[in-house]
Length: 302
Image: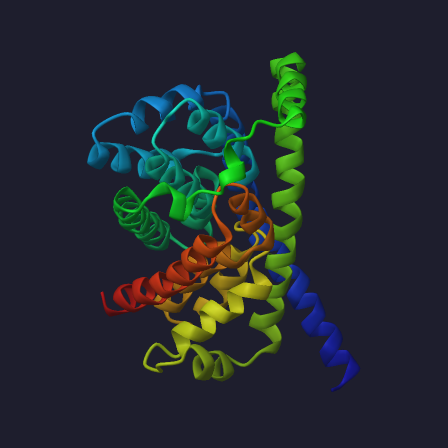
């Protein structure tokens, strides 16, 4: 390749990345601030009241609160364990835990701006549907099949961590947590923007259309497989999928990517393993991947 042409294309990559970053940055900041503000809500009380309702109502409320919760999986697990030890039913608690690992207000805001309202709403509806199905299934399953028996053992380290959090000044904690979240999300967002720009500039649209053509049967499974190495951070994948959509990727494949990605992330899986039995966790991941393919197929046909 001509070095002059390569240099021009690299400049185009960085220029395109800069434009996308400037467009998304205010929404990333807004999402982080809203998420951190919501963390100060009394989630323990809200979830406990929701989970102690009639089973069907509890499942619906748990799924809804899971979508609204800004807490990461590691922030949600202590709440779930704390409520489980007080006798709160496990099936809505696990529903809340699962849904909150798949969608949150920050992701909704960034998806709305980065890809569009339709995809943002499709993600919410798909996650809500999965949460309701999961909750209804767990309602009928014995807890001993699902729950890790060691999950109800309170550890001293958890108590010390909670005590340290209580001693932190609220405003200082809010600013510090917001900055850490912005650093984490921003880092992966910039990586996603850069990778997406490289794809737009260097990868011919015909290649993307060949791999993710909505009419091809392998497009959805390929998107789900692609999510395994690429879904490091939910917000960071949005610029990448935006570029693939512009190059010809089907919207169903994009939705399958967004649903299968969290199911195969190592960090959330470790957190879920503290609550779920290993055998059930394997079934849970496999079911979520299959659901992502089904949801992507339905969305592609709409």
